[in-house]
Image (cartoon, rainbow, N blue to C red; front, side, top):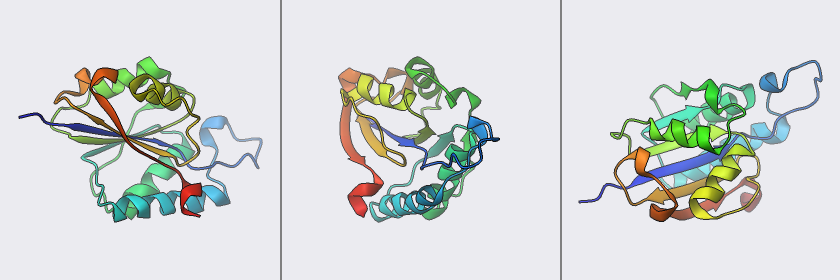
Length: 165
């Protein structure tokens, strides 16, 4: 029996550059971001997608996006905030995923480009800029997070807000 793993790579919603005194880490969502995050959460809920675990960058825009989507899909567990996701490259993101407890079959990973885009390209050959609040769903034909790779990955879907407007 093969237990599949599902990874949802989610870029934070659109953030504001209005207050230039804020650090990059502390930038909040802008109006479009505050509309797009619940929109994508509702799409996930319609598809009956509920992860076993949510891990997010602690940057304000990613944290807010993760909280909004978690609320929309009725995710009741704690969100894990991992500071290594902020400004992470592909190898750091892969190490974070490899360390996930294998009891978790599905994972939402909230973070930032270009790291998320590089990870998606490495796993499924989809070389695209992930738009803000974009969600890439990848299924792996393996039962251990440390064993996910391009050879057992399959792109299931790639959704983003403009598809629903």
